[in-house]
Length: 203
Image 1 (cartoon, helix red, strand yellow):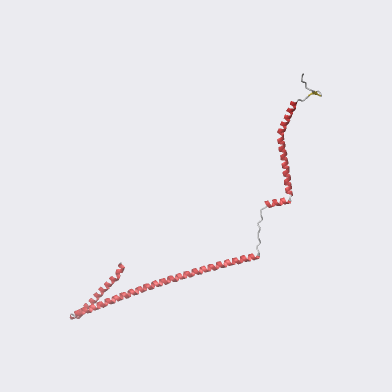
Image 2 (cartoon, helix red, strand yellow):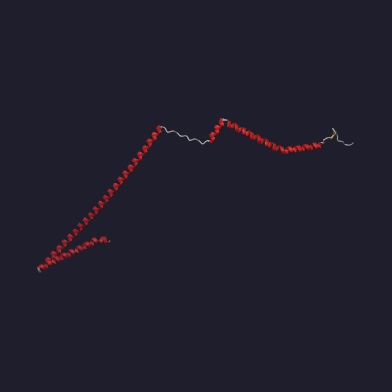
């Protein structure tokens, strides 16, 4: 039995393998073209949707107001000053100025008083020092006069004694010897007293 291919209208009948090959070709073409078509369709659809969304948003007054508020810089709020607050601020400023003036005057007055007290104190100290120096000088003079008086008394006594002893000789020689003895005694007493006074200074 021979295998014959049936003909339809004088043309050979298509085989199943040919149909499968054609289907594979169609599938390959669709596999290559479908992703690009889908990508283009999605891109066009998204762009159209975004355009419509932006147009609807711009047409809405509430959306426009929100956009203006978000973009515009904040306006600083200035609180108007009431007449009562301004008067109070002026009064407080005058009080501060007056207190500063009074404080400066008190500080100056206290400084002047302290300076005057210091000057008076220095003057009193200087007067006391001068008075003490004068008192020491008077005391030293009195001390010297007392010792010189004592030395003079001793000298007079020695002179009288020498004159009495030499009374038998010539009157002029007697007087001269008495005076010389008195002067010598006075000089000796004065020298002894000067050594006594100068000893503490040497130490």
